[in-house]
Amino acid sequence: MRRVGDDVARELGRFREVSALAPLVDAWPGAVGPEIARNAWPARIGRDGTLHVHTSSSAWAFELGQLADRVGKALGELAPPRFRFAVGPLPEPSRNVPEEVIGMHVEPTEEHELKGAELAAEIEDENLRKVVAKTAAMSLARRDSDRLFWYHSRCPEAPGFQGFFYE
Image (cartoon, rainbow, N blue to C red; front, side, top):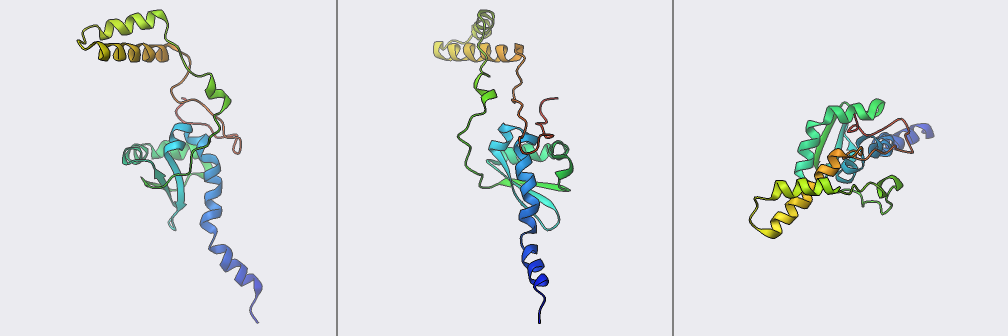
């Protein structure tokens, strides 16, 4: 007669990867921030412990490969020994916009608009000059604001995790 415990252990072993991935998936958005979470998502854990992360493009895969140490530090105890970033399918984005993002738009002041117009003054094409002036004014306003480019969000499922672009 076979032991039921052996069968259960064997079946549960098939799900080891999934159970190890769940805490990483929960912590991921809070650790890397919303911009990265929209463009990169943990896909699976390899047998050697490597976390395979799907990205929206090869540019994201390359960039995150360069930031792997920082991602690992942001994940803390959950960090795998290695990361592998590659283009792959991502989950559908959430339709819920966090409250903290709603009021994040920064309006340029008249000073920003004047400086933007000054920077773009030598552009001959009128439409291009207006676009560059507006873009420069918005960039100057963002620079002068106290808001960060990457908004900061805590992960409710893992309150100790925060984005790592906020140093």
